[in-house]
Image 1 (spheres, rainbow, N blue to C red):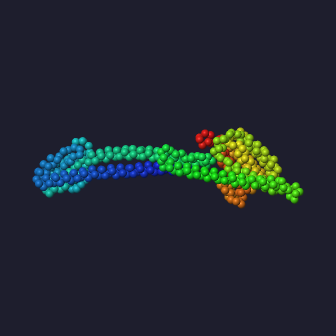
Image 2: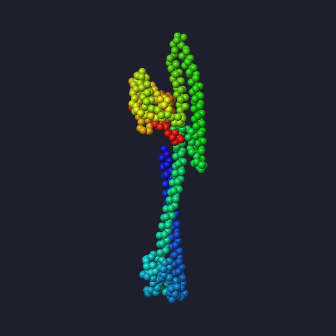
Length: 449
């Protein structure tokens, strides 16, 4: 049952991690590109400023003044400028390695750094001077490329670290949320199994989950109180109605028709049936799963089923039916032996009472290691699918065919549920097959079994 909740929390955590990772990568890449472009822009700005100063030197002192300015600025090596000056006739006045004559404007090229002996990327700016000569400034971009390599590695390492931290935090949150949800599910399952005293655990943190748990616990307290009130009122009503009917039966037994000693047997039987019905209603209200688990004793289920089945063979023959059984030996379970006996008697009585003469009732008991499976099947008219659904919902509609087995089956369902088991109805094709699946060992909510 908790698996969908776990998958939802896990999917949410994975989605959060993915969004965080993508967002971090996008922000890191944006910061990297911005810094890189800013370095390139500042390099271009320095090149343009140097070109303006050299141009001004040419304008002030002509070509000799330009050469003196170039010699002043010349400083080969990393992060420095190089200069190529070609006069109007194509004569190189200043040269830098194998840099060719370039067209005016900005450009990017590869050149061999004479100091480092390696080929580096370079940014170039070429301008034609007033006397027809051409001046090219070559700026080493190697430090930008180094920035790219170093920053890229650092960026991915930082994002990986952030991703791991976010993943650890998200998974920790997922485990916390899942543990709280599991606690709620465990409480719900315990209450479903009949332990109405279970409550959602509240941690010392008193956080939002604990606020929800406190609200749920308050609701469970209220529902438990209301259920106890319903049981109490139902018990009072049953007792109040049972008493006058018992007095009516006693009166009929003493009375005779026309004072000739003829007892109205049918009226007495009707009273007995009503008394039995109220007895069943009172018994249903007394069944408590938590009490059963706390006072359970181990008994031989195979022996009990065989004993009750043999006892009903003669009853079935008197009614014109046949009853057979197939019982696996050595099946023991823990629980309330009297209640399990009542469950089987109710199912057998229902099968015998609501099948025509000549019908066959089959009782079968098997086990799979953890559960016992008790089956009572007949080949009578059975129930429609709609009637079976109504009975399974424990709310048979008055006047429907399902009402024929409503109270007896309700008691059997209550006993099965009180033993942490389940009663289901199936089409026997023809007839009705009732299957009761019971755990061999009851689980106490304190953890023992």
